[in-house]
Image (cartoon, rainbow, N blue to C red; front, side, top):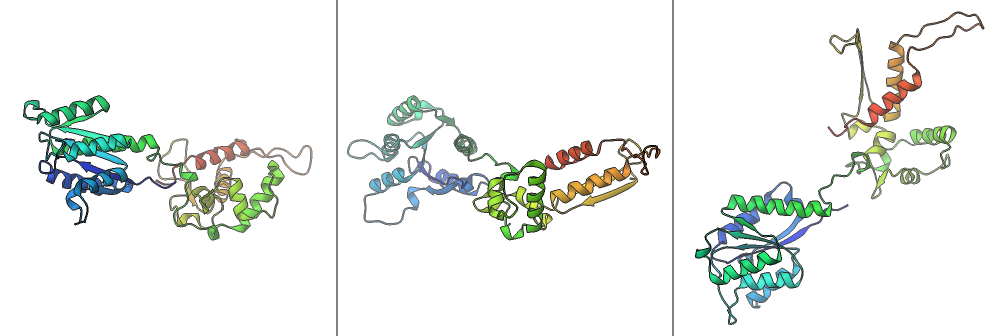
Length: 315
């Protein structure tokens, strides 16, 4: 899923907030999170010379934007023959075309505010939730919160599960056909898996939901990769044998197992079985003496699988 990319139109009385607009644009494009979702921030002072009326160009830009960001201060600005400022025209146009509108009212001394700006603030207050600010720091904080809220509402900030995300830089060529054939044979024999032994790699991954836009997911690499640690260095299993029941150094023995997850489960299981008690009985009913582990091997296998499946490989 590709991240949305917004076009933002910053509107305000030109002279009153000239530097503020520049600084706000720099903030939006420089923020580590927000810049990933912003395609363009329009400032009318950066518009090149053009054989077209300025007010027409501004309204065209409002029409092309995704988010209208208005900063309403004390001044109303230049008025046209109808007595309406560009700031109010832009707000009206954004409203008419149902743009997402974010409005920030600068200052709290209403007596200093131009009567027409007071009227615009009052009208905007009746149409949307506007924020009152006193300085640039408050402006950036409120703008950041507003944009994050928009992105979160769209689901753009939700991080997909690690196992379902495409493995960065990995290709289908990195998957072991030998391991895939083993999986198909074992799954068919023990679980009645529906796919045939000669199923193509891509078909198997599709069936198991291990492909993301044609690329193997992290789970696919960890399960079937020839070298999973190339992409995930910490995807290893550490087995430790302590002298008693307390976790303390020095250890009696320690092993770190790598490879794909099937290999790690088998190696970890063998490690545990080699360390626990296995009393041997008498040959009373045959030539082979019975031997029973102090813990059921199947329970050990299940515990190991659960531990490996729930670890944080991206840490």
